[in-house]
Length: 589
Image 1: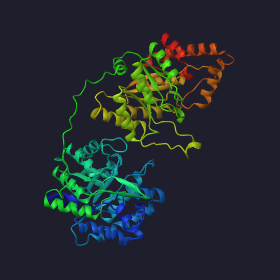
Image 2: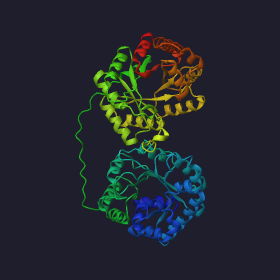
Image 3: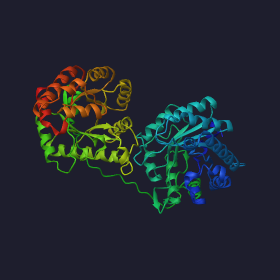
Image 4: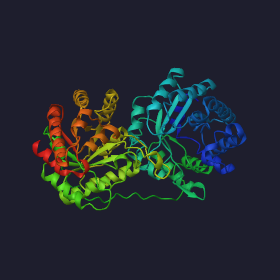
Protein backbone atom coordinates (compact mmCIF):
# COMPACT_ATOMS: atom_id res chain seq x y z
CA UNK A 1 0.00 0.00 0.00
CA UNK A 2 1.64 3.20 -1.14
CA UNK A 3 1.43 6.67 0.24
CA UNK A 4 -1.64 7.82 -1.69
CA UNK A 5 -3.71 4.75 -0.87
CA UNK A 6 -2.82 5.02 2.80
CA UNK A 7 -3.88 8.67 2.78
CA UNK A 8 -7.15 7.65 1.14
CA UNK A 9 -7.77 5.05 3.83
CA UNK A 10 -7.09 7.65 6.52
CA UNK A 11 -9.69 9.96 5.00
CA UNK A 12 -12.27 7.18 5.22
CA UNK A 13 -11.59 6.60 8.92
CA UNK A 14 -8.88 5.67 11.43
CA UNK A 15 -6.28 3.17 10.24
CA UNK A 16 -6.26 0.38 12.84
CA UNK A 17 -3.02 -1.51 13.43
CA UNK A 18 -2.58 -4.85 15.16
CA UNK A 19 -1.50 -5.21 18.79
CA UNK A 20 1.62 -6.58 20.44
CA UNK A 21 3.59 -9.37 18.84
CA UNK A 22 6.18 -10.02 21.55
CA UNK A 23 4.00 -10.21 24.66
CA UNK A 24 1.22 -12.10 22.82
CA UNK A 25 3.74 -14.56 21.34
CA UNK A 26 5.00 -15.25 24.88
CA UNK A 27 1.49 -16.22 26.01
CA UNK A 28 1.01 -18.57 23.07
CA UNK A 29 4.09 -20.73 23.55
CA UNK A 30 5.21 -19.75 27.08
CA UNK A 31 8.54 -18.50 25.72
CA UNK A 32 10.24 -15.18 26.46
CA UNK A 33 9.04 -12.38 24.22
CA UNK A 34 12.66 -11.66 23.29
CA UNK A 35 12.67 -14.85 21.21
CA UNK A 36 9.82 -13.84 18.95
CA UNK A 37 12.02 -12.62 16.06
CA UNK A 38 13.91 -15.93 16.11
CA UNK A 39 10.52 -17.60 15.75
CA UNK A 40 10.30 -16.22 12.20
CA UNK A 41 12.60 -19.14 11.34
CA UNK A 42 11.78 -21.70 14.05
CA UNK A 43 8.01 -21.23 14.37
CA UNK A 44 6.77 -19.50 11.19
CA UNK A 45 3.33 -21.09 11.51
CA UNK A 46 2.78 -19.57 14.97
CA UNK A 47 3.87 -16.10 13.83
CA UNK A 48 1.52 -16.40 10.86
CA UNK A 49 -1.33 -17.45 13.16
CA UNK A 50 -0.75 -14.36 15.32
CA UNK A 51 -0.86 -12.10 12.25
CA UNK A 52 -4.11 -13.74 11.11
CA UNK A 53 -5.61 -13.48 14.60
CA UNK A 54 -5.12 -9.72 14.54
CA UNK A 55 -6.44 -9.47 10.98
CA UNK A 56 -9.47 -11.49 11.99
CA UNK A 57 -9.98 -9.10 14.90
CA UNK A 58 -10.42 -6.24 12.46
CA UNK A 59 -7.08 -4.48 11.96
CA UNK A 60 -6.26 -3.07 8.54
CA UNK A 61 -2.47 -2.88 9.00
CA UNK A 62 0.03 -5.31 10.51
CA UNK A 63 3.64 -4.90 11.59
CA UNK A 64 6.33 -7.34 10.51
CA UNK A 65 7.79 -9.38 13.34
CA UNK A 66 11.10 -7.49 13.17
CA UNK A 67 11.02 -5.02 16.07
CA UNK A 68 14.21 -6.32 17.72
CA UNK A 69 16.34 -7.02 14.66
CA UNK A 70 18.82 -4.22 15.41
CA UNK A 71 19.66 -5.89 18.73
CA UNK A 72 20.01 -9.26 16.99
CA UNK A 73 22.33 -7.68 14.41
CA UNK A 74 24.44 -6.27 17.23
CA UNK A 75 24.63 -9.57 19.10
CA UNK A 76 24.66 -12.15 16.31
CA UNK A 77 25.65 -10.26 13.21
CA UNK A 78 23.87 -8.45 10.39
CA UNK A 79 23.55 -11.56 8.24
CA UNK A 80 21.46 -13.29 10.92
CA UNK A 81 19.18 -10.25 11.25
CA UNK A 82 18.71 -9.99 7.48
CA UNK A 83 17.80 -13.67 7.24
CA UNK A 84 15.17 -13.30 9.98
CA UNK A 85 13.87 -10.19 8.23
CA UNK A 86 13.29 -12.12 4.99
CA UNK A 87 11.44 -14.84 6.92
CA UNK A 88 9.27 -12.22 8.66
CA UNK A 89 8.41 -10.50 5.37
CA UNK A 90 7.35 -13.80 3.78
CA UNK A 91 5.15 -14.69 6.77
CA UNK A 92 3.46 -11.28 6.73
CA UNK A 93 2.82 -11.44 2.98
CA UNK A 94 1.21 -14.86 3.30
CA UNK A 95 -0.98 -13.59 6.14
CA UNK A 96 -2.52 -10.78 4.05
CA UNK A 97 -3.23 -12.77 0.89
CA UNK A 98 -6.70 -11.86 -0.42
CA UNK A 99 -7.13 -9.31 2.38
CA UNK A 100 -7.10 -5.51 2.20
CA UNK A 101 -4.48 -5.23 4.89
CA UNK A 102 -1.26 -3.18 4.69
CA UNK A 103 2.13 -4.48 5.78
CA UNK A 104 4.44 -2.10 7.63
CA UNK A 105 8.13 -2.89 7.89
CA UNK A 106 8.74 -2.49 11.63
CA UNK A 107 11.98 -1.55 13.40
CA UNK A 108 12.46 -0.72 17.07
CA UNK A 109 15.11 1.47 18.74
CA UNK A 110 18.84 0.74 18.96
CA UNK A 111 20.20 -0.98 22.02
CA UNK A 112 21.28 1.43 24.82
CA UNK A 113 24.92 2.39 24.64
CA UNK A 114 25.39 0.92 21.16
CA UNK A 115 27.79 2.39 18.66
CA UNK A 116 26.62 4.28 15.58
CA UNK A 117 23.53 2.31 14.59
CA UNK A 118 22.82 4.00 11.25
CA UNK A 119 24.74 1.53 9.02
CA UNK A 120 22.88 -1.44 10.55
CA UNK A 121 19.48 0.22 10.23
CA UNK A 122 20.19 1.37 6.70
CA UNK A 123 21.13 -2.19 5.72
CA UNK A 124 17.88 -3.52 7.23
CA UNK A 125 15.85 -0.81 5.48
CA UNK A 126 17.54 -1.64 2.17
CA UNK A 127 16.66 -5.30 2.67
CA UNK A 128 13.02 -4.36 3.22
CA UNK A 129 13.05 -2.15 0.12
CA UNK A 130 14.54 -4.97 -1.96
CA UNK A 131 11.66 -7.20 -0.86
CA UNK A 132 9.12 -4.57 -1.96
CA UNK A 133 8.28 -2.77 1.28
CA UNK A 134 6.76 0.69 0.84
CA UNK A 135 5.41 1.27 4.37
CA UNK A 136 7.70 1.73 7.36
CA UNK A 137 7.10 2.08 11.10
CA UNK A 138 9.94 3.15 13.38
CA UNK A 139 8.60 2.68 16.90
CA UNK A 140 9.53 3.12 20.56
CA UNK A 141 12.33 5.62 19.83
CA UNK A 142 13.59 8.14 22.42
CA UNK A 143 14.84 10.71 19.90
CA UNK A 144 14.43 11.47 16.22
CA UNK A 145 18.05 11.47 15.01
CA UNK A 146 18.08 7.98 13.52
CA UNK A 147 14.53 8.17 12.15
CA UNK A 148 15.30 11.40 10.31
CA UNK A 149 18.31 9.85 8.58
CA UNK A 150 16.42 6.67 7.68
CA UNK A 151 13.36 8.53 6.39
CA UNK A 152 15.55 10.66 4.14
CA UNK A 153 17.28 7.51 2.86
CA UNK A 154 13.96 5.80 2.16
CA UNK A 155 12.72 8.83 0.21
CA UNK A 156 15.73 8.63 -2.12
CA UNK A 157 14.81 5.02 -2.96
CA UNK A 158 11.00 5.14 -2.91
CA UNK A 159 9.73 8.74 -2.96
CA UNK A 160 6.13 7.74 -2.22
CA UNK A 161 6.97 5.43 0.71
CA UNK A 162 4.82 5.94 3.82
CA UNK A 163 6.80 6.49 7.04
CA UNK A 164 5.45 6.55 10.59
CA UNK A 165 7.68 7.79 13.43
CA UNK A 166 6.58 6.67 16.88
CA UNK A 167 8.16 7.72 20.18
CA UNK A 168 7.96 6.09 23.60
CA UNK A 169 6.91 8.61 26.23
CA UNK A 170 6.24 8.26 29.92
CA UNK A 171 2.96 9.57 31.38
CA UNK A 172 4.50 13.05 31.73
CA UNK A 173 5.06 13.20 27.95
CA UNK A 174 8.86 12.83 27.89
CA UNK A 175 11.05 10.13 26.39
CA UNK A 176 13.72 8.23 28.30
CA UNK A 177 16.26 10.79 27.07
CA UNK A 178 14.23 13.69 28.45
CA UNK A 179 12.96 14.84 25.06
CA UNK A 180 9.46 16.30 24.81
CA UNK A 181 7.26 13.87 22.88
CA UNK A 182 5.13 16.69 21.52
CA UNK A 183 8.18 18.53 20.23
CA UNK A 184 9.57 15.40 18.57
CA UNK A 185 6.29 14.68 16.78
CA UNK A 186 5.79 18.26 15.70
CA UNK A 187 9.38 18.66 14.52
CA UNK A 188 9.57 15.56 12.34
CA UNK A 189 6.17 16.32 10.79
CA UNK A 190 6.92 19.98 10.18
CA UNK A 191 10.09 18.95 8.36
CA UNK A 192 8.04 16.50 6.23
CA UNK A 193 10.33 13.59 7.04
CA UNK A 194 7.45 11.40 8.23
CA UNK A 195 3.91 11.07 6.93
CA UNK A 196 2.55 10.41 10.42
CA UNK A 197 4.00 10.45 13.91
CA UNK A 198 2.95 9.78 17.46
CA UNK A 199 3.49 7.57 20.49
CA UNK A 200 3.62 3.93 21.48
CA UNK A 201 4.71 1.78 24.42
CA UNK A 202 5.62 2.77 28.04
CA UNK A 203 2.28 4.51 28.73
CA UNK A 204 -1.26 3.20 28.86
CA UNK A 205 -4.19 4.81 27.01
CA UNK A 206 -5.38 6.77 30.03
CA UNK A 207 -2.15 8.79 30.14
CA UNK A 208 -1.74 9.23 26.38
CA UNK A 209 -5.28 10.60 25.96
CA UNK A 210 -4.60 13.92 27.81
CA UNK A 211 -1.40 14.29 25.80
CA UNK A 212 -3.35 14.07 22.53
CA UNK A 213 -5.82 16.67 23.74
CA UNK A 214 -2.94 19.15 24.00
CA UNK A 215 -1.82 18.56 20.39
CA UNK A 216 -2.99 19.96 17.07
CA UNK A 217 -4.34 16.91 15.24
CA UNK A 218 -5.82 18.87 12.36
CA UNK A 219 -2.59 19.28 10.36
CA UNK A 220 -1.07 15.79 10.22
CA UNK A 221 -2.00 12.16 10.87
CA UNK A 222 -1.31 11.32 14.52
CA UNK A 223 -0.39 7.72 15.41
CA UNK A 224 -1.18 6.33 18.88
CA UNK A 225 -0.46 2.74 19.98
CA UNK A 226 -0.56 2.51 23.80
CA UNK A 227 0.29 -0.39 26.06
CA UNK A 228 -2.60 -2.36 27.50
CA UNK A 229 -1.82 -0.73 30.83
CA UNK A 230 1.07 -1.07 33.24
CA UNK A 231 2.90 -4.33 33.96
CA UNK A 232 3.26 -6.27 37.17
CA UNK A 233 5.55 -9.21 37.90
CA UNK A 234 3.93 -12.50 38.88
CA UNK A 235 6.52 -15.12 39.66
CA UNK A 236 9.01 -14.73 36.85
CA UNK A 237 6.53 -13.42 34.32
CA UNK A 238 5.69 -9.84 33.42
CA UNK A 239 1.91 -9.54 33.19
CA UNK A 240 -0.16 -6.69 31.80
CA UNK A 241 -3.51 -6.17 33.44
CA UNK A 242 -6.19 -3.88 32.14
CA UNK A 243 -9.42 -4.32 30.26
CA UNK A 244 -9.89 -4.66 26.52
CA UNK A 245 -13.19 -2.78 26.80
CA UNK A 246 -11.54 0.11 28.67
CA UNK A 247 -8.69 0.19 26.14
CA UNK A 248 -11.14 0.34 23.24
CA UNK A 249 -13.13 3.12 24.87
CA UNK A 250 -10.05 5.25 25.29
CA UNK A 251 -8.91 4.65 21.70
CA UNK A 252 -12.36 5.66 20.52
CA UNK A 253 -11.89 8.93 22.43
CA UNK A 254 -8.48 9.35 20.79
CA UNK A 255 -10.14 8.97 17.40
CA UNK A 256 -12.66 11.62 18.42
CA UNK A 257 -9.73 13.89 19.32
CA UNK A 258 -8.35 13.48 15.80
CA UNK A 259 -5.91 10.56 16.03
CA UNK A 260 -5.99 8.88 12.61
CA UNK A 261 -3.74 5.86 13.22
CA UNK A 262 -4.47 3.60 16.18
CA UNK A 263 -3.22 0.27 17.49
CA UNK A 264 -1.81 -1.52 20.48
CA UNK A 265 1.60 -2.14 22.02
CA UNK A 266 2.77 -4.29 24.94
CA UNK A 267 0.09 -6.41 26.58
CA UNK A 268 -2.54 -5.93 23.88
CA UNK A 269 -4.07 -9.02 22.27
CA UNK A 270 -6.46 -9.70 19.38
CA UNK A 271 -9.33 -9.14 21.82
CA UNK A 272 -8.13 -5.56 22.42
CA UNK A 273 -8.04 -4.92 18.68
CA UNK A 274 -11.45 -6.58 18.15
CA UNK A 275 -13.15 -4.39 20.72
CA UNK A 276 -11.39 -1.30 19.36
CA UNK A 277 -12.55 -2.12 15.82
CA UNK A 278 -16.11 -2.50 17.09
CA UNK A 279 -15.93 0.81 18.93
CA UNK A 280 -14.61 2.61 15.86
CA UNK A 281 -17.37 1.14 13.68
CA UNK A 282 -20.07 2.14 16.15
CA UNK A 283 -18.74 5.63 16.44
CA UNK A 284 -19.28 5.60 20.21
CA UNK A 285 -17.40 4.39 23.26
CA UNK A 286 -16.98 0.62 23.29
CA UNK A 287 -18.22 0.09 26.81
CA UNK A 288 -20.06 1.66 29.66
CA UNK A 289 -16.76 2.66 31.23
CA UNK A 290 -16.96 6.37 31.89
CA UNK A 291 -14.09 8.66 32.70
CA UNK A 292 -15.25 11.86 34.34
CA UNK A 293 -12.82 14.67 33.68
CA UNK A 294 -12.86 17.20 36.48
CA UNK A 295 -11.02 20.46 36.27
CA UNK A 296 -8.52 20.52 39.12
CA UNK A 297 -9.07 23.25 41.65
CA UNK A 298 -5.66 24.90 41.64
CA UNK A 299 -4.64 27.55 44.13
CA UNK A 300 -3.74 30.92 42.67
CA UNK A 301 -0.15 30.98 41.48
CA UNK A 302 2.27 32.76 43.78
CA UNK A 303 4.70 35.30 42.46
CA UNK A 304 7.79 33.56 41.04
CA UNK A 305 10.70 33.57 43.47
CA UNK A 306 13.74 35.62 42.57
CA UNK A 307 16.99 33.81 41.91
CA UNK A 308 19.51 36.22 43.42
CA UNK A 309 22.53 34.35 42.13
CA UNK A 310 21.22 34.20 38.59
CA UNK A 311 20.24 37.88 38.58
CA UNK A 312 23.68 38.96 39.76
CA UNK A 313 25.46 36.70 37.28
CA UNK A 314 23.37 37.76 34.29
CA UNK A 315 23.65 41.45 35.19
CA UNK A 316 27.37 41.29 34.48
CA UNK A 317 28.55 41.49 38.09
CA UNK A 318 31.38 39.18 39.11
CA UNK A 319 30.17 36.32 41.32
CA UNK A 320 31.88 33.92 43.70
CA UNK A 321 30.77 30.30 43.96
CA UNK A 322 32.30 28.11 46.66
CA UNK A 323 32.23 24.31 46.63
CA UNK A 324 31.85 22.70 50.04
CA UNK A 325 31.53 18.92 49.99
CA UNK A 326 28.75 17.52 52.16
CA UNK A 327 29.59 15.33 55.19
CA UNK A 328 30.52 11.64 54.95
CA UNK A 329 28.37 10.93 58.03
CA UNK A 330 25.16 12.32 59.52
CA UNK A 331 26.83 15.06 61.59
CA UNK A 332 26.23 18.29 59.71
CA UNK A 333 26.92 20.85 62.45
CA UNK A 334 30.54 21.52 61.41
CA UNK A 335 29.44 21.77 57.79
CA UNK A 336 26.84 24.41 58.62
CA UNK A 337 29.40 26.42 60.59
CA UNK A 338 31.70 26.37 57.57
CA UNK A 339 28.84 27.45 55.30
CA UNK A 340 28.10 30.42 57.62
CA UNK A 341 31.72 31.52 57.40
CA UNK A 342 31.67 31.31 53.60
CA UNK A 343 28.39 33.24 53.48
CA UNK A 344 29.73 36.03 55.68
CA UNK A 345 32.96 36.16 53.66
CA UNK A 346 31.13 36.93 50.43
CA UNK A 347 30.11 33.67 48.74
CA UNK A 348 27.20 34.28 46.35
CA UNK A 349 26.36 30.60 46.08
CA UNK A 350 27.57 27.37 47.71
CA UNK A 351 27.95 24.37 45.43
CA UNK A 352 27.72 20.81 46.73
CA UNK A 353 29.20 17.90 44.78
CA UNK A 354 27.05 14.80 44.22
CA UNK A 355 29.09 11.93 45.70
CA UNK A 356 32.39 12.77 43.93
CA UNK A 357 34.56 9.78 42.86
CA UNK A 358 31.41 7.71 43.45
CA UNK A 359 31.93 7.86 47.23
CA UNK A 360 28.70 8.14 49.18
CA UNK A 361 28.13 11.45 50.99
CA UNK A 362 25.12 13.26 52.42
CA UNK A 363 22.78 13.97 49.50
CA UNK A 364 23.77 17.21 47.77
CA UNK A 365 20.20 18.30 47.08
CA UNK A 366 19.04 17.73 50.66
CA UNK A 367 22.02 19.73 51.93
CA UNK A 368 21.21 22.50 49.43
CA UNK A 369 17.66 22.67 50.79
CA UNK A 370 18.95 22.84 54.36
CA UNK A 371 21.31 25.69 53.46
CA UNK A 372 18.51 27.60 51.78
CA UNK A 373 16.00 27.01 54.56
CA UNK A 374 18.20 27.59 57.63
CA UNK A 375 20.80 30.08 56.41
CA UNK A 376 19.09 31.72 53.45
CA UNK A 377 22.11 30.77 51.33
CA UNK A 378 21.71 30.31 47.59
CA UNK A 379 22.89 26.81 46.72
CA UNK A 380 23.94 25.05 43.55
CA UNK A 381 23.75 21.27 44.08
CA UNK A 382 25.45 19.01 41.56
CA UNK A 383 23.21 16.42 39.89
CA UNK A 384 24.89 13.39 38.33
CA UNK A 385 23.45 11.17 35.61
CA UNK A 386 25.02 8.18 37.38
CA UNK A 387 22.62 7.50 40.22
CA UNK A 388 19.12 8.33 39.07
CA UNK A 389 16.90 7.88 36.04
CA UNK A 390 14.71 10.50 34.43
CA UNK A 391 11.72 9.97 36.72
CA UNK A 392 13.88 10.36 39.82
CA UNK A 393 15.50 13.47 38.36
CA UNK A 394 12.14 15.11 37.69
CA UNK A 395 10.93 14.28 41.20
CA UNK A 396 14.11 15.76 42.67
CA UNK A 397 13.80 18.96 40.64
CA UNK A 398 10.22 19.42 41.82
CA UNK A 399 11.38 19.14 45.43
CA UNK A 400 14.28 21.56 44.90
CA UNK A 401 11.97 24.10 43.32
CA UNK A 402 9.54 23.86 46.23
CA UNK A 403 12.43 24.49 48.65
CA UNK A 404 13.58 27.58 46.76
CA UNK A 405 16.69 26.00 45.23
CA UNK A 406 16.72 27.13 41.60
CA UNK A 407 20.30 26.40 40.51
CA UNK A 408 21.78 23.04 39.50
CA UNK A 409 25.09 21.92 38.09
CA UNK A 410 24.74 18.80 35.98
CA UNK A 411 27.55 16.32 35.42
CA UNK A 412 27.64 12.80 34.04
CA UNK A 413 29.20 11.53 37.26
CA UNK A 414 32.27 9.47 38.13
CA UNK A 415 31.87 5.73 37.44
CA UNK A 416 31.59 3.25 40.30
CA UNK A 417 35.02 1.64 41.00
CA UNK A 418 35.39 -1.74 39.29
CA UNK A 419 35.54 -3.82 42.47
CA UNK A 420 32.22 -2.43 43.69
CA UNK A 421 30.18 -2.95 40.53
CA UNK A 422 28.84 -6.31 41.64
CA UNK A 423 27.08 -4.66 44.60
CA UNK A 424 26.72 -1.03 43.46
CA UNK A 425 25.10 -0.41 40.10
CA UNK A 426 25.63 2.69 37.98
CA UNK A 427 22.61 4.24 36.27
CA UNK A 428 23.43 6.08 33.06
CA UNK A 429 20.14 6.61 31.23
CA UNK A 430 21.34 9.91 29.77
CA UNK A 431 24.31 12.27 29.75
CA UNK A 432 24.78 15.85 30.95
CA UNK A 433 23.81 17.38 27.60
CA UNK A 434 20.56 15.42 27.46
CA UNK A 435 19.77 16.31 31.07
CA UNK A 436 20.32 20.00 30.33
CA UNK A 437 17.85 19.84 27.47
CA UNK A 438 15.33 18.05 29.68
CA UNK A 439 15.60 20.67 32.46
CA UNK A 440 15.20 23.54 30.00
CA UNK A 441 12.07 21.88 28.61
CA UNK A 442 10.70 21.66 32.16
CA UNK A 443 11.64 25.31 32.66
CA UNK A 444 9.34 26.21 29.78
CA UNK A 445 6.45 23.93 30.73
CA UNK A 446 6.53 23.47 34.49
CA UNK A 447 8.61 25.69 36.77
CA UNK A 448 7.52 29.19 37.73
CA UNK A 449 11.08 30.10 38.62
CA UNK A 450 13.29 28.47 35.98
CA UNK A 451 16.42 26.61 36.99
CA UNK A 452 19.79 28.07 36.15
CA UNK A 453 21.58 25.12 34.57
CA UNK A 454 25.33 24.88 35.03
CA UNK A 455 27.85 22.44 33.63
CA UNK A 456 31.50 21.47 33.96
CA UNK A 457 34.40 22.41 31.69
CA UNK A 458 37.78 20.67 31.92
CA UNK A 459 40.30 23.29 30.83
CA UNK A 460 43.17 21.00 31.87
CA UNK A 461 42.44 18.39 29.20
CA UNK A 462 45.29 17.61 26.81
CA UNK A 463 42.86 17.32 23.89
CA UNK A 464 40.95 20.49 24.62
CA UNK A 465 39.21 20.49 21.23
CA UNK A 466 37.05 17.59 22.45
CA UNK A 467 36.16 19.51 25.63
CA UNK A 468 35.23 22.58 23.58
CA UNK A 469 32.99 20.50 21.33
CA UNK A 470 31.22 18.96 24.34
CA UNK A 471 30.88 22.40 25.93
CA UNK A 472 29.28 23.81 22.78
CA UNK A 473 26.79 20.94 22.82
CA UNK A 474 26.01 21.66 26.47
CA UNK A 475 25.37 25.33 25.69
CA UNK A 476 23.21 24.40 22.69
CA UNK A 477 21.14 22.20 25.01
CA UNK A 478 20.56 24.88 27.62
CA UNK A 479 23.63 25.15 29.86
CA UNK A 480 24.05 28.83 30.75
CA UNK A 481 27.01 28.61 33.11
CA UNK A 482 30.21 26.55 32.98
CA UNK A 483 32.44 25.94 36.01
CA UNK A 484 36.00 24.96 35.14
CA UNK A 485 38.20 22.44 36.86
CA UNK A 486 40.73 24.10 39.22
CA UNK A 487 43.40 25.85 37.17
CA UNK A 488 47.02 25.47 38.27
CA UNK A 489 49.04 25.54 35.03
CA UNK A 490 49.67 27.76 32.03
CA UNK A 491 47.87 25.27 29.79
CA UNK A 492 44.75 25.60 31.91
CA UNK A 493 44.91 29.38 31.64
CA UNK A 494 45.42 29.30 27.87
CA UNK A 495 42.51 26.89 27.40
CA UNK A 496 40.31 29.10 29.57
CA UNK A 497 41.08 32.02 27.26
CA UNK A 498 40.10 29.90 24.25
CA UNK A 499 36.87 28.85 25.95
CA UNK A 500 35.90 32.45 26.70
CA UNK A 501 36.27 33.35 23.00
CA UNK A 502 34.50 30.23 21.72
CA UNK A 503 31.54 29.75 24.08
CA UNK A 504 28.39 31.84 24.41
CA UNK A 505 27.82 31.41 28.13
CA UNK A 506 29.04 32.55 31.52
CA UNK A 507 32.24 30.96 32.84
CA UNK A 508 33.50 30.68 36.42
CA UNK A 509 37.23 30.00 36.74
CA UNK A 510 38.11 27.16 39.10
CA UNK A 511 40.59 27.77 41.93
CA UNK A 512 41.55 25.28 44.65
CA UNK A 513 44.34 26.03 47.14
CA UNK A 514 46.84 23.22 47.73
CA UNK A 515 47.26 22.58 51.45
CA UNK A 516 50.44 20.48 51.67
CA UNK A 517 53.21 18.70 49.76
CA UNK A 518 51.37 15.42 50.08
CA UNK A 519 48.17 17.03 48.78
CA UNK A 520 50.07 18.44 45.79
CA UNK A 521 51.50 14.98 45.01
CA UNK A 522 48.06 13.38 45.26
CA UNK A 523 46.45 15.94 42.92
CA UNK A 524 49.22 15.51 40.36
CA UNK A 525 49.10 11.69 40.46
CA UNK A 526 45.52 10.66 41.10
CA UNK A 527 42.91 13.31 40.34
CA UNK A 528 41.68 13.15 36.77
CA UNK A 529 40.96 16.54 35.23
CA UNK A 530 43.47 18.36 37.43
CA UNK A 531 47.08 19.24 36.73
CA UNK A 532 49.90 20.64 38.87
CA UNK A 533 53.32 21.75 37.63
CA UNK A 534 56.21 19.78 39.19
CA UNK A 535 57.75 23.09 40.28
CA UNK A 536 54.62 23.89 42.28
CA UNK A 537 54.72 20.49 43.97
CA UNK A 538 58.33 21.09 45.02
CA UNK A 539 57.49 24.49 46.53
CA UNK A 540 55.46 22.71 49.21
CA UNK A 541 58.23 20.31 50.25
CA UNK A 542 59.11 20.49 53.97
CA UNK A 543 56.70 23.39 54.66
CA UNK A 544 54.83 23.54 57.95
CA UNK A 545 51.03 23.37 57.92
CA UNK A 546 50.81 27.12 58.44
CA UNK A 547 53.38 27.97 55.76
CA UNK A 548 51.74 25.57 53.29
CA UNK A 549 48.38 27.25 53.89
CA UNK A 550 49.91 30.68 53.28
CA UNK A 551 51.50 29.44 50.06
CA UNK A 552 48.19 27.92 48.93
CA UNK A 553 46.40 31.23 49.44
CA UNK A 554 49.22 33.16 47.72
CA UNK A 555 49.24 30.90 44.63
CA UNK A 556 45.42 30.93 44.41
CA UNK A 557 45.35 34.73 44.41
CA UNK A 558 48.09 34.79 41.79
CA UNK A 559 46.04 32.53 39.50
CA UNK A 560 42.89 34.56 40.22
CA UNK A 561 44.62 37.68 38.95
CA UNK A 562 45.89 35.98 35.79
CA UNK A 563 42.47 34.60 34.75
CA UNK A 564 40.36 37.60 35.82
CA UNK A 565 39.86 38.99 32.31
CA UNK A 566 38.59 35.65 30.95
CA UNK A 567 35.89 34.85 33.51
CA UNK A 568 32.56 36.03 34.86
CA UNK A 569 33.37 34.98 38.40
CA UNK A 570 35.33 32.58 40.56
CA UNK A 571 34.63 28.98 41.49
CA UNK A 572 36.52 28.27 44.71
CA UNK A 573 36.87 24.63 45.75
CA UNK A 574 37.30 24.03 49.49
CA UNK A 575 39.99 21.41 50.25
CA UNK A 576 39.51 19.21 53.33
CA UNK A 577 36.81 21.56 54.72
CA UNK A 578 39.45 24.34 55.03
CA UNK A 579 36.88 27.11 54.88
CA UNK A 580 39.37 29.41 56.63
CA UNK A 581 41.62 29.35 53.55
CA UNK A 582 38.71 30.04 51.19
CA UNK A 583 37.49 32.89 53.40
CA UNK A 584 40.98 34.43 53.30
CA UNK A 585 41.03 34.18 49.49
CA UNK A 586 37.59 35.79 49.20
CA UNK A 587 38.63 38.70 51.42
CA UNK A 588 41.50 39.48 49.05
CA UNK A 589 39.36 39.05 45.91
